[in-house]
Length: 473
Image (cartoon, rainbow, N blue to C red):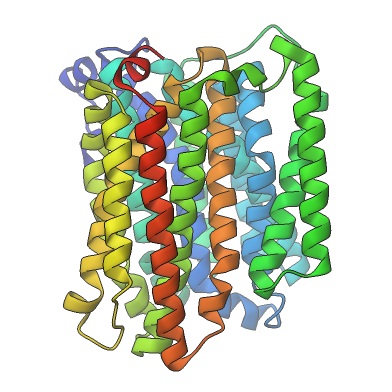
């Protein structure tokens, strides 16, 4: 975790607490970091355990990928509902519920006697993550203001990057020395600490007196579920089947029904459509789709390219991406503070533009060349650009809506990011199915497409955000 938060001194509280309305600002940040780290670590650590899990539980090549998909499907489908529930029932309450569910599901994964039980437990983990993730951000958005909010979200983003970075090495060590079940037992003490800190130090927020828009919640969950299912089928088969098109059609139809229902509900809607009258909110949503779409393709394609095209071992390929998370972890807090001081327009313009430059450098990658000259420069530039965008983007999303809808806005933005990543993963199938010279050629084409997407994200920020609107949103 982030060492700057471990000692909670009076001086530290006063410093972070400037611009916050909470009695224990450092502990509030710590609670959200501990909670979200459950999802961040689990999202990366399970990948390295897939071969061992498949061997132990007799999973074939077609079934093993669903160990990941069973977690991602409910996570993507329920993010919007999880955030809206926190806005209505209380964010601390829903955060605690999500942590408890995630911990129980983790124990179920560790004790699973066969693959069907494991998949069911993984799905329950996804439900818990969908509840705790948007509410951890909703708590930060409602607890801090001004530069304190930027510092808090920057610290949260840095902790997430660090947690994602340590996941694969830690998971690999646990699988080799203890066994794959240990990666799920690891979640239990973290969850316990998160619950204790949240219940003792985090103030409750949310609790809208209005009745929750259950019709809108059901339609939104169904729409996101159908779209996620279709995109997952696309990415797992590397081609669009009839099931993919049926899922996409059903998802779009349900999404249209959701928008119609929310229009009729007006201010009582789970996600009032007046949010989309805000040019910054719409611009930030488009930016998220473009930027995380570009990034999602990188995280899938780079390890495969290095292993197949550069003869890297799986652990070497995992460590090759380590500088990416380290740079984001170090720089996110500074970027969040800067965005609150000058507004998010320039960080969210320049960050994606630098990211696009990094993808352009990657388009000339040579996996057989030295890592330090052939691979690292592109990864480092992409990481630097993303470090300038991650925390300012989250801060700007929360600042673009009123306090009543911070959880909903966080859930919606997270769902948009997941959608972009799923689309990129599906398109990355062209890279994964290639070999030899064609593999490098397909990767370079994908890197150029990612560069265009990232640059478009930066231009979107420039034309939809302005300094005045950002500081008064």
